[in-house]
Amino acid sequence: MGLPDFLIVGAPKAGSTALHAALAQHPALYGASPKEPKYFLCDGRPPDPAGQRGPGDAHSAQEWVWNLGAYERLFDRAPAGALRFESTPFYLWDRAAQTRIAAALPDVKVIAIVRDPLDRAFSNWSHLWADGLEPEGDFRTACLLEPDRVAAGWAPFWRYLELGRYGEQLQHLYSVLDPERVRVVRYRRLVDQQQQTLDDLCTFLGVEPGVVTTVPRANAGRWAPDSLVNTQLRRAVRLGAAAGAYAPPQVWRQASRPLLAALQRGSAPRAVLDPEDRIALREAFAADVALLSDLLHEDYTDWLSATGRGTFTARSS
Image 1 (cartoon, rainbow, N blue to C red):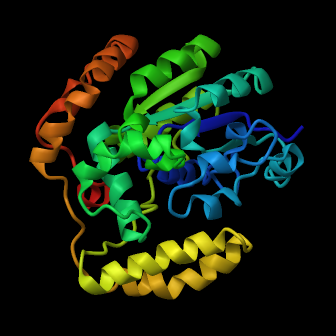
Image 2 (image 1 turned 60 degrees about the horizontal axis):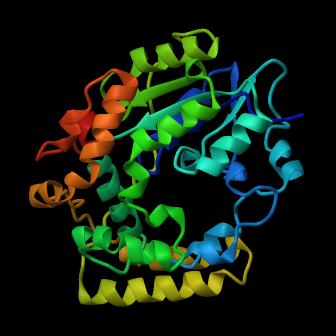
Image 3 (image 1 turned 60 degrees about the vertical axis):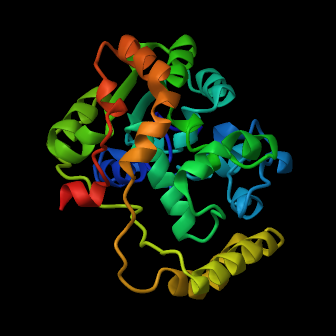
């Protein structure tokens, strides 16, 4: 059966796209395309519309690969002997997905990427804001709206705070998978120590290190500042995405390009996380950071500081 030998998990905007692109360059590794099929979120049936009620959710849900045959075909072109993998970050957040993975892939290895949860949440919000889908222009307010959005059935991508509670997530993962088959990678090491990190991961996977040496820049969108014109463009994007739920995904993606080009026009610098927002929100992660530090026997309390480390692009330039 064409199922993966290992998975990359973590959280959106924590580096899974860049790591997928880096490892896919190794001749002994074969990455699925699309890289994020979300198969183990689905339990053998299409995603429940009740959990896809946020802006653009229903359109995006059409691209989830929920059928086993379709999932296996993602790996059909893998060279003989190559290790197959895919990279759906939400598998770390979704406890039911973890249980399905353990049952379907008893020998699977898992690479979990963890990033400063406040930097990650801000990057998640920035991504959706720049794409015109996020209706709330204030990051802290958007975070405080999370319980209401969850209750209203918005998809996992909108859980800015919840997705960053890695301690709870890894604790459950370790209860269904042998911790020896899980490798946790800090985002900052993926950026700052690229070759060493890639070599360590190749050794963990049992393939030759030294073949892949750098992590390509990936998934870095442009900024879209707030303005009267952009407010109207964002409304058009959200209306179009809602209508796009009733058409093939490629139709709306093609139709949305002019809107996104107009929204992300110019060269405005990307927004940065306000230290006051970090200070106001960091308590939401204090207990989980302590749990993660105990679980991994490594100090993660720097994540609770008043300043973050910024984006991949800013740190690697």
